[in-house]
Length: 96
Image (tube, rainbow, N blue to C red):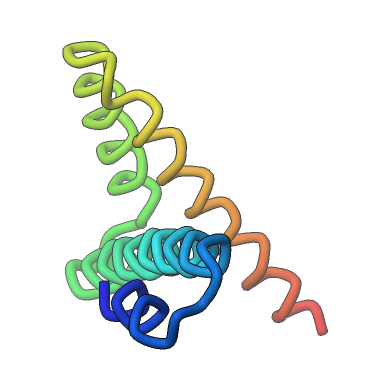
């Protein structure tokens, strides 16, 4: 929100404000995906469990929520795509 008001204050062209908005949304979703990933892994280690069970539970909960309310399907898909993107980037960095 601050970035959008900053672009208005600086009198930047309209497309730049739109790009800033999309970048902020993508960055926010990626941060939420990282927070969720770290929370699940931390909880699994703290309770001496495998994280596979937590991921399966999360997937089942999201699938049930998407079945109950089909408008959530796009958001759930986008969030899981952000998780996959996060995993791909971290694996590439570890490979280097």
